[in-house]
Image (tube, rainbow, N blue to C red; front, side):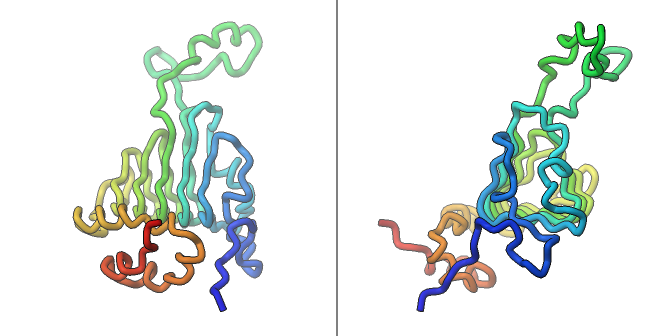
Length: 215
């Protein structure tokens, strides 16, 4: 009898734990893209992730998140809309409050941004991680609790601190290249399910042996 994979379309994959939600079936913004099985864990209304955890998202920059990511409570993404002018005496954004101040909207329009924020596949963001605008977090990366990620994180890197610094990489360059070539997160779901133990606890050699044969 073939193994039956988990369902990527349900909001609450663990009915007994409503604090855990899959983000892909939950989010509605066209500026946010999330891969299958990426989840968020929060005891305080995790279904409000789009408004409580993606902040100052006034566009047009996008938030792109891969598959199979694990986000702990309090993970937040600060988007480019949080930017203020810093080249004059005041940083206060007067024009957004309306009235005659709105006539000066050009003073804050077109503030420089850092582009899209991108999180790879199989990324674990620890409790209270804050990701700043335009950051790119590589596949297989991990952030420690309370990290403030202001710079790009390499594939399979582990970072921590404020600002977050690279602590170490989970594998050497050669093994990281092998893992990226295998891209197990893109395997057909049935094949992935069949080889779940290898993906979770096997060696890279085991993973290569389990990879689907190209057609």
